[in-house]
Amino acid sequence: MSNSSSSSNRATVPEAREALNKFKYEVANEIGVPLKQGYNGDLTSAQNGYVGGYMVKKMIEAQERSMAGKTTM
Image 1 (tube, rainbow, N blue to C red):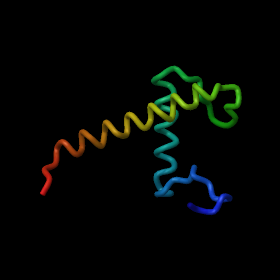
Image 2: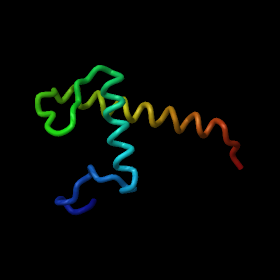
Image 3: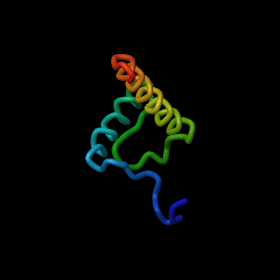
């Protein structure tokens, strides 16, 4: 495992940070979570978790659609 001082919140591809951030706000808006720029300490952990979970669900669905259009060797 990596050093305990390293963060697991870093984007693997730094160039994707802005797109992921935009996606996060789009998902929050779509599911009705009042996520705003800056401090969001007034949101519950359940609300924040729901945003993250829904993001993962949508990313998996997009990847599955992408893979369904391709043939395997």
